[in-house]
Image: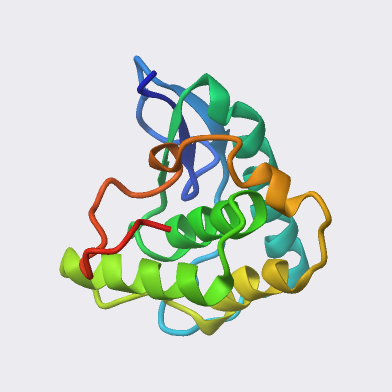
Length: 156
């Protein structure tokens, strides 16, 4: 199947053409580096949730490449929300995995801001009766970074 979609989380009008892929979403999310909090956390949370919902509807059509300006914070937050909301993984497992992947590729770790981890935890605390049924709905390799778990275990 391969990759088909791109989520650009750093600009509403990116200065590149993703062809042969297509933009699924183009959005500028607030820079949260240096442990910053969003100026409007409710709005930022809703934007991320909308992206995650849209991504879920398209996953069966092809893989999704997700990027932000630095490739850590928002990228990890969106991937983490997909994994907890639609794949049934626990927040601690996802946060630990995202952190280990960032460190494996020489990045300082994940999250950039504690708020980003709270976004992952917030979803996993919600009670959803359909969560287990959704866990096997699509392939993991379509929603995670293409790196191996450095501890040799399964990718979340």
